[in-house]
Length: 103
Image 1 (tube, rainbow, N blue to C red):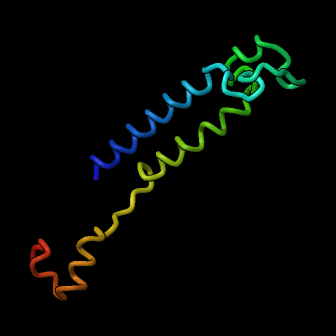
Image 2: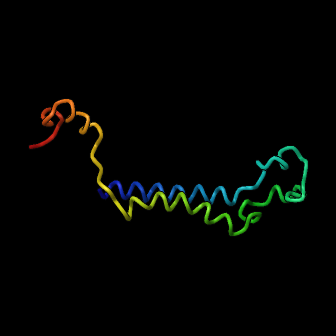
Image 3: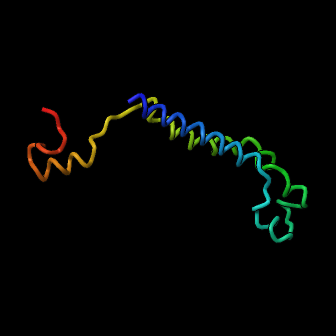
């Protein structure tokens, strides 16, 4: 069980790092920046080179926090599940003999 918790923590750390990378990257993928037609929201090329975090402000942090929270739920609220292959094996054989079940 501890290995699974460590795995979820590692996944949460990777998610945080990807979120930081996304928030600090420039907004060059916005359509106005790609085609060079600027609007009221993206008025010039400098705005295209600004980071996503500086453009959207603090509103981007809750959006990036949701995947991290989802990754941390199994760490704090673990649930043991029955392995699906054993369930299907027992339904075919009946008593679980031959499924790797210790008696």
